[in-house]
Amino acid sequence: MVAVLAALRDEQCGYTLRKTLAEHGMAIDEGTLYPLARRLESQGLLASQWREEDKRNKRFYRLTSEGALILEQLLCEWQSIDASLRAVLKEQGNGTDRAISASR
Image (cartoon, rainbow, N blue to C red; front, top):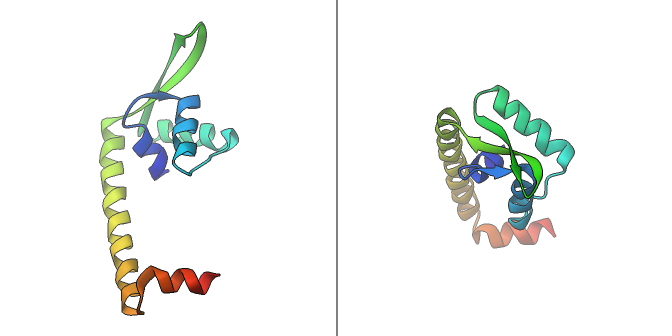
């Protein structure tokens, strides 16, 4: 959800949204992405509009002002969790290198 909201700071159609996320290592199936977009729209976090582009009707999504506020809150929470996890890993010695070695 955070990745979708972040990607939609700039308006995109569903296809380009999927492509953008995949390019950043977050491939999301259409059967997951579109229901998520509809749910976020019903919650007032996204707005969408049908428009013709390249002789095809496409649905364009964008972040609403409420969505931008929620994204900001989620990013703050994410940064807090990340800082806490880094502190725990550092306390354990060798930080993420040790965690990565242990997971192999």
